[in-house]
Length: 294
Ligand code: ARG
Ligand code: MN
Ligand code: MN
Ligand code: MN
Image 1 (cartoon, protein in one colour):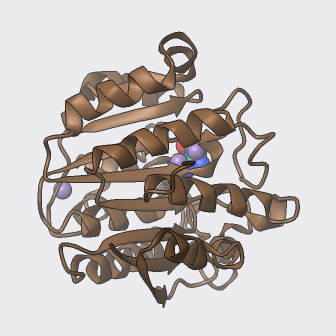
Image 2: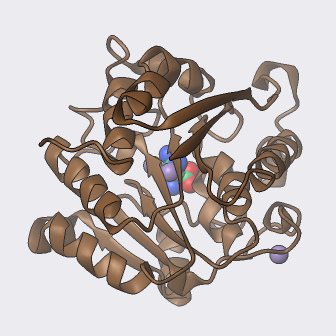
Image 3: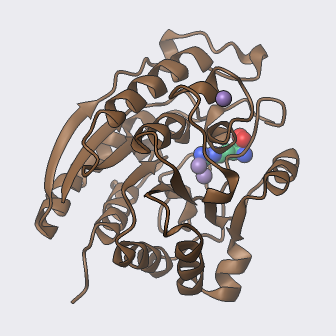
């Protein structure tokens, strides 16, 4: 397969500094080499330009911290992805999760797409519901067309249908965010369902729900994993996916042959030990892209 890597060193949507080093951390952990060893052709498109937080005004009072530069970077990322050939599998390397407003939209190439959101958080806040004003807590709401009009119109009014979204690994949802997720009818497998049903049943149900859509995007936030396994994240939450649960999920999604794009987000090497989190996430990408034990 042809794989394109795109770095989006975004550190404007999160509350803690350092996630802009995510693309470097993933390259350093040999993402492209690992995918080549599986047999793919990999090209690295480099990084989308993203301004540093120190050089911009937060505009905190707006309820949307750093909206302007986030809009610009997400638009640029989305345009670059939308130009790729249909058969190219893009992997967007964040950066914080605000990038997904652009990457999910661009990777869809204007087609109806399913979204598998692997995360500790639902990231379904709107500016009105967000307790923090951090845009990395808001991408999914904006993908379905809620929230800020500028942010949700990235990609020219293409929106996801709530019924085409499945979230897995969830264990931290803000109070008003919870009402929005329920109102919109998003399918959510919290850690309770992961414990109760097992990840293989969840993968099966997810593919039953989304597997016939023309495109399927996996957005993988490193904080979905248990913090003991992936400590290099800005918003760790105890009780996450184990190493094998996460790999099995990627392996089963890979076997379906339906996944067409991926994000790897929230890897923060400034909070990590020995770049461990990037290495773990490279392993996840490998499993999603066909690495097999035998
Ligand atoms: N729900 C919290 C907020 O809105 C945390 C979001 C964390 N999101 C993430 N992509 N790590 O601020
Ligand atoms: Mn997230
Ligand atoms: Mn998260
Ligand atoms: Mn809109």
